[in-house]
Length: 224
Image (cartoon, rainbow, N blue to C red):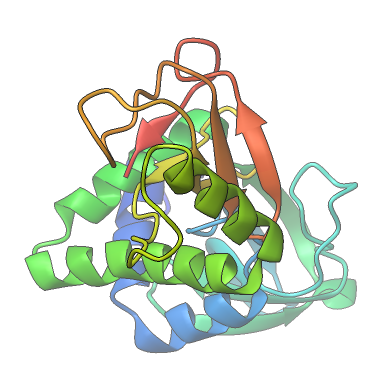
């Protein structure tokens, strides 16, 4: 680890997230613990266990949304360290704890991290994982299905037709957790499936929540 590098600097975060995306064990643990709608870990910490000091990003533990860092660091905490190792720290024994949660703009940096992965296949897998989660949420949501069916039927596509499925995913990077969502209603710009994201749209979030946004001119939003 490079201790002279400022803790949780953008360069340090970028480096550790690139390593995290390529670390199978860490990615598996994160999938089991990650908050709904959060694609990448965003709580960067430095702490000791009484015998050694660690810096890394939280990939598992006890969630506590009442705390700024989003995790109860006094409980058992799973870190992916900047040595590229998975470490478990018992928070009640931790020493010299410092934590910093990434701001909303850092999720845009995380997108750049994904773009910087040397293997195009790795980037494709990351994108596919997001859309797969959204497809699963859509299949489970009767409300989202009803909104989507009404949308396509009102535009001349009868129920008897083989209805398409929604495919456009966006990130709301000004909302807490920068959730990703599937566009299920709104205005078209150039025919079916080409959404005008400057207009109000209805989204199904990966958490299963159906929400609305007034469009990208009123709220930070980007298409994935």
